[in-house]
Length: 115
Image (cartoon, rainbow, N blue to C red; front, top):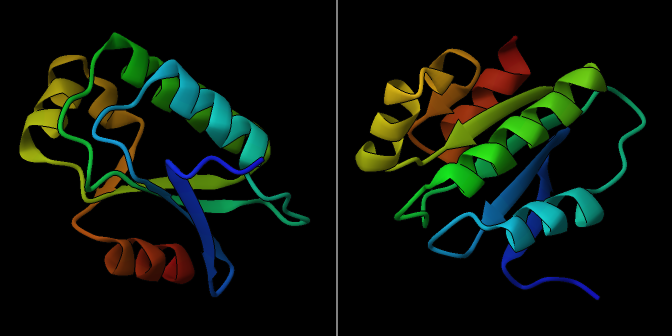
């Protein structure tokens, strides 16, 4: 059964996962892992986090685990639309060094296509 809190779409050869909740939770992380479309090539994934208003330790864990899954598969992950306050959490925790951030999905997809 599909979880309405995540909407997947493919733009060119990039999978865009739009998180519809205001917070990343353990359930969101589980849904990401279960529902993520299968890729035959190294995955290019954009997480649209523009609706996220808060990120705590569980949300950080969700992002780190998902990043590891994508990179282990030889893929690339970008984060689109992160709020300034959430981005500040990433900076304070020094996790901003392992993620690519873009203002919106369109710029993320373009970056995935050109690299």
